[in-house]
Each structure stands twice: as structure tokens, then as C-alpha cells.
Length: 79
Image (cartoon, rainbow, N blue to C red; front, side):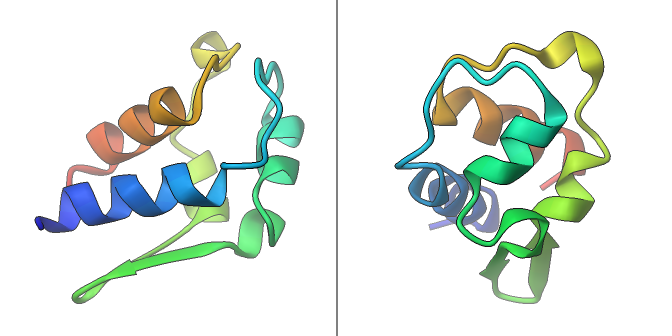
């Protein structure tokens, strides 16, 4: 599995209990089990939700699924 796919899968798994749609950055951070400190790791790549949230734009909301959140994050961080 590639780093990109591994991180994507981890994000989806971490959001398995989230209630969608998510319409604010605060609700998105709160949807992760450890909030902004939730960390995804693959090989040498370490990505915290707090860092990832900095690349999410206001017009990305509302998110309708964990897959959508994961796609935006992995695409923008350049994995």
C-alpha cells in the first residue's frame, strides 16, 4: 500500500464515528478521537490532524463523508 493510500485509510478509520455532514473546522477537529492531536503515520510520514486542518479551506465545507475529508487532505499535502 502506498503512503498516500495508507494515510487516506487511516483518516477514514479515525472518522468512523463522525456525524456527517460536518460544516465547520471546529466540528471537523472534534470529530477525530484525539482532536487535532490525532496522528496518522506511514513510513517516514507523520501527519497530525491539526497540521492537516491548515490546508482545508472554508469553501470545502460541508464535508459529506470521511472519504471526502481524506481525499482533500491527501491531495493537498502532496502525498
